[in-house]
Image (cartoon, rainbow, N blue to C red):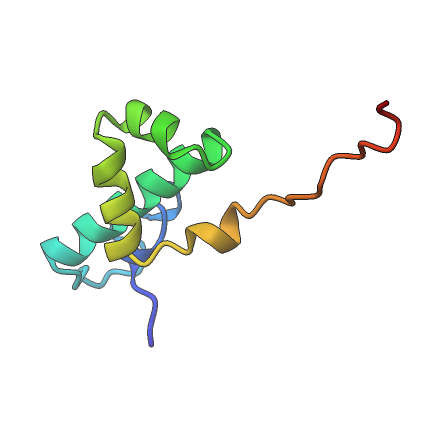
Amino acid sequence: MTALACHLPPTLQVPGGNGQEDTCSLKTCIKTLERDMIMDALKRCQGNISAASRQLGITARMTRYKIKNLAIDYRSLFKRSHRPADISGLS
């Protein structure tokens, strides 16, 4: 599979950088942009879907839907250690 310019984050894309016309379809470019925006918002919010949704101006339900349909691997990116609290010192 070849990576096209539209698969790169917008900050890394160079207009007309290689002299070839960009061959991404509108649908592909929109999906890539949505995926990047959701990932960036989730990173800023340390994986909190509700906070990321507020930043994006969409509902948490829509964010979860897009995470699933855009194949964002949320669990592996934002897994938290669930170590039990040390309660041995409590009486």
